[in-house]
Length: 109
Image (cartoon, rainbow, N blue to C red):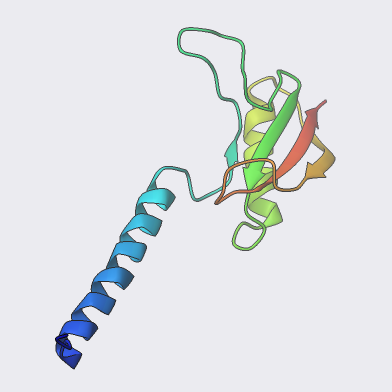
């Protein structure tokens, strides 16, 4: 049985690390990194299938790097389209995307 030299083991180890980093980057690229309003829709339809409703804004965010002010600003922007102001309603944990797992709900009043 032939043994591989240290350089070959090092190269194999680096390939593995680079592959993992590449896959993590691809996963992160598939979603938004900042807070966003969950107002997904089916193609060609007006009704949303996301968590947001016309008078209730759902903002997905990551509490590690998204501030409460940024989440509130996004909710204010969403309610401003109806000329209303956001009022905090509730939070849900781990029910949105992987990089933005939490959801804050705001009622537009």
